[in-house]
Length: 127
Image (cartoon, rainbow, N blue to C red; front, side, top):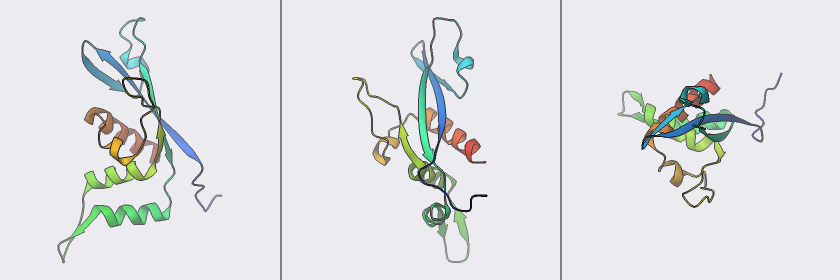
């Protein structure tokens, strides 16, 4: 049994995307997006580290608020901070084909549909 988290180990989450008549469609399953053989979904690969104790401490500190008598968990902030803390890399490129850094500033610019699907996939991978 492993009692310590190896922060060099990573796991992947893959999301597939297609441009369908000017609107973006995304899925965790590429076959859901293939309406015909001419459509080849783009594969987005996100690499994450496994969370360890200090990650839990920091996420709790950042996502919990208190009014003095009661503590409240801000689920949106928890998800946002977990994504930023555990994300190590992605294969997203800009319109010119240049690699986009997988940092907080660029996470903030993700398409909301992509970010929600990514958070769902991250939850599934960690549960």
